[in-house]
Length: 174
Length: 146
Image 1 (cartoon, rainbow over the protein chains, first blue to last red):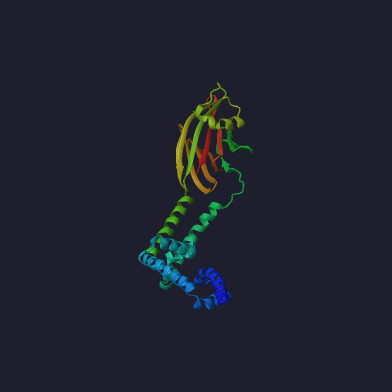
Image 2: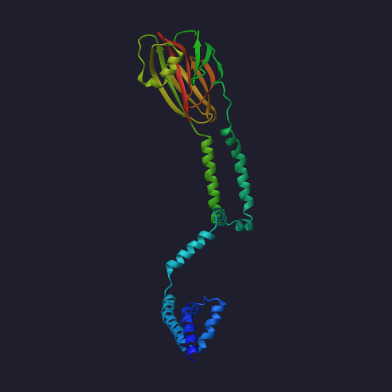
């Protein structure tokens, strides 16, 4: 009896150290079976376990109540922002949504729209082409004629100056 | 439907902007200068072209007689009278950036003293000179900006 009581005490002291983990379901199978084998024979460990449960219920109820009452708007805002950042549409998708392409396709409005665009491109293309075409380095003077003077053209290579000189004129200007 | 109208208006605005750029006006400046070897006066308003003049001519005096500025649209002709009895017609016949093509006609007493077509870029100056004026000569400095 004494020996058995001693074994029981030793077992109880080792099991009581495991009770917290048992309560939190963090034990290995072996430890769990040890605790569960011990509990029916040990009122002290059972009481300890019951008091843990009582304490948990005591804490959990008001916390759960508070959580149910509180909507935590800022938490939801943060979550929604996160979702939007992760799943938000790209620029192209936003533009496509704005343009509502399915709507356009459904209504066949794209036919006059494309026709208008093509006409504009055809009208604009020569002008744009003219504008961006690189002009070969030209002689500044395309032609020069004079009924009354001889003409000489003088162009400086390094300077942006071209001279058209009229000489041997018929008479002096007034 | 509202979106389509907005799109069409945008296309129209872009077209108008593009067309307006294509048909931009050319700001043309014609200065009438009397150059001579009498004195050593350089007109202060000719400082910007004095180096150009000095690199080409040996005159010691340059005097600004007249300064004409005007805007030219494509195929528009502007007539000015740079000197009494002389008519100068300037026509913008082409504009391909960075070059504007001008036809310049100088008429005196019903005779065509000069008929030329020149290509001007914004930094280029064409000097038309030679007609004598008393002890010096007349020089037309023509520049375009656009």
